[in-house]
Structures are given as structure tokens and as C-alpha cells.
Image (cartoon, rainbow, N blue to C red):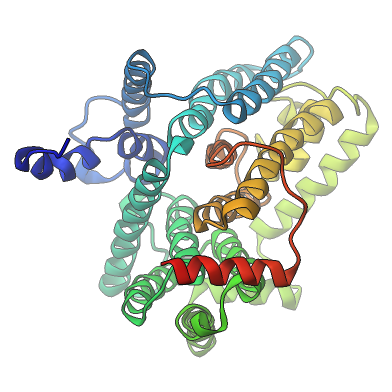
Length: 425
């Protein structure tokens, strides 16, 4: 039955009030909630939107609009085992109040980040696209705020919304990855590529003027990893409107960074690494990795020292090692590390099967977001700071067609299928 004109006029409002918009505002609340423009809010925005997400999720479940598919249930079960083991490790952790707080956040906001993506956002293409569009909108607003501060004060320490540059940098990096994926795998006309580049370049510039090496490197590496795949699956006639703009934009930003290398702090930080005259943030992270390996090998290698034990057993002032692998090994041992990576591997199996079956670009976007969040988790934050990674793992449940994964396709078969899809458009 055709919808009425009134309902069609309400359609944009329905998108704005969707679960995906509320969920994205919850997931990225740490980016903007410190803004002076939001001082009037009486409650913590992360907790507020977490409550709203939970309420909407309950309504969706009660109204039968959540599919409990095998992919979501399997990954949720694996996550439940991982979280249960992490909480059980509190029995032997030498950690104090930090361990308790970490356990609470892991069982609440971090788990909610996964569940929202696994059971709702990954349910349908429209939901995934709505979530990606909201994430991109937040990234663009953050980038605009950064560029405005650059215009006002020059290339000093830029922190949009009074938020630490690493957090805002990661937000902008999401936009770089999403637009980069779109340009490489979805653009089908010069006009679409022009619009994509018009967003891609400002996002890259904003990311460049921040001080965060981690978000910048993670975004560039992620998009760089997608280029070889795009070379394989993209028909030759689409190379000029897909590959050339992305490679050209990244090359232009590289030239811009080289030209302003004496004024941009980001370039100075990268140069200090290669020159051996490293900054404290870099040397500290190297020390954390070295200390973490020593602590892990010194005892409790299998079961770990317990959740939140890092500050007690490492001798370091930081509460976490800013590397999720070291954090897993030290606090949860081989058991927790295997459980965590099993979660990722099973999710990647679903994504690979879905992509080889359909060649839909949404699968590439999900994979790119996982790569980006994992690379960030290797250089900053703890489990809960990296709840973006847990959300990305939940997105791996996005799979249109169920069934057994087919054999890996040859390059010729992939090109043939891609050509068929393009001709059908």
C-alpha cells in the first residue's frame, strides 16, 4: 500500500529520531559533551544517551523489530564469555578502585556499544547506512570546529569542543575512513566523486592540523589497505573516478604536510620518531610495551593478573599500557587474549562470506572501521576508551545472506562479478 503524502513528509524526521542516530550520539558522546555550549545539560550525556539507547532497544525487541540471527547470537555469546572471564578475574586482581570501575564500564557502556551494533545497526542495510551517515555528520562537525580554531588561532594545540585532541582526532578519522571507502567502492559518477573529494580533503586537513599521530596514521593506513582491494574489484572504467581522487587527495595532503612541516606539530612529532629525538608520549608507549611483556612473562601467563591490575603490577604511573594487546596479555592472560581475538575472527568470517557472496561495499566499510578502530587501540586508551572497537566488532554481524562461506574467488571471478553488478546498475 502506498504511503500517504503526510507520512512521506515525516520520513526525514523518522531518520533523525532513529535508533542509529541516538546510538551514534551515545557512542561518540565523549567527543562533544565537554563543549561549553552543552554546559546547560544537567546529566552526563554518555549516561543519558546510554539510557535512551537501552529504552529504544527494549521497545524494538518488544515490537519484534530485532532479528536474533545466528551471527549476532554467536558473537554475543563469545563476548559474554569474554566479559564474564574479565569480571571473574577480579577475584585475584591486585587492582583497587580502578579495577572495579573498569569492570563496571566494561559490563555496561562497552558491552552496550557492541550489542547496539550487533543486534540493531547490523540488522539491515538502511540501518547500517544511517549509522554511517550519522557518524560522518559528527566527523564533519568536528572537522569544521577544528578548522575554525585553526583559522582563529593558527596551528597551535587544537582541541575542538574542549576535548583532548586524540578523541576528536579519532572522530574525524572515522569520517576519513567512511568517505574513503565510499570513493573507492561506491562512487559511479564524476559528480559523486566530486562530492566525496569535497568531504575527504577537509577531513584530511582537519586531521592533519591536530596533534594526534595515532588517529592520522590509523586513518591513512586503513584507506591505504583498501586501495589494493579496490584495484582488484573495480572495473577499469571506474578507476578514474574512484582510485585517482583518493590517491590524489592523499598525495596532496602529503605535499601540504611537507610544505608546512616547520609549523605543524603533527609533522614535528612524526619527524622526531625517525630522527630518534622522540617525544615523551612515544617513549612512554614503548616503555609500556617492554614492561608489559616482562610482566606477562614473569607469571600468570595463562590467566593474567586480573582486570585492572596494570598499575599495580607494571610499576608504571599510567592506569593502562595504551596498547590493547599488552593490556589483554597482562590483565587477562592467554585465556582472555584468545577469547577476544576469537570474537574478531568469527566476525571477520561473517564479513568475508557476505562480501564474497554479494560484493556489497557495506562489507568493506565494516571491515575498514574494524581496521581503523583496532589500529587506534594499539596506541591509545584501554578497553573502555576503545569501545569504538567493540562497536566495530558488533558491525561484523552485518550479513545479508546466510549460509556456508563459498571458496575464495579468483581475481578473474571477482572482476567478472563486479562487472555484472556494475552493468546491472
